[in-house]
Image (cartoon, rainbow, N blue to C red):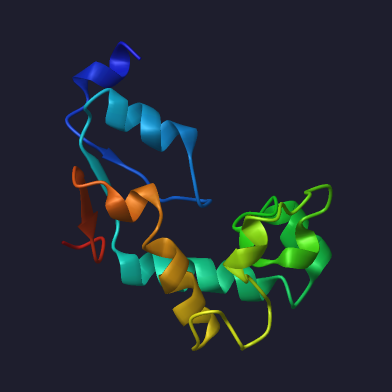
Amino acid sequence: YKDLQDASAIVQVPWDWALVSFMEFLALGIPLILPNRDYMHSLITSVYWSRLANHTVWSSSWKRRFLQLVPEDWEGFELGASNKSLKMTETTNYAHGGSMLDHVAYWWQHTEYAKQRMVKTFDSLSH
């Protein structure tokens, strides 16, 4: 952590819904720069839909990232009564309506990435 204190900022591309490193960087007071929400919505949706092409490859290459949107991959996870109200399904009848991209956008707004005021975003690598 000593070396991180010299960093003026950290650019991070989240690879799952929650990252310990993200919270650690925030706790250290290091400014965080993430891709903007539209970029992340597209990335997460792409990861989610890529599993349909070859689930085995997806499971090994993505290490089951963002699997909370894939109920059949919740192996070994006991869904508690309070979590059943989340109505996360793989159908197009999402609890809040719309497409898979809408589903991702709905859940993204509830992440620490979207809620933390200290986080800045970029919309492309050229800006």
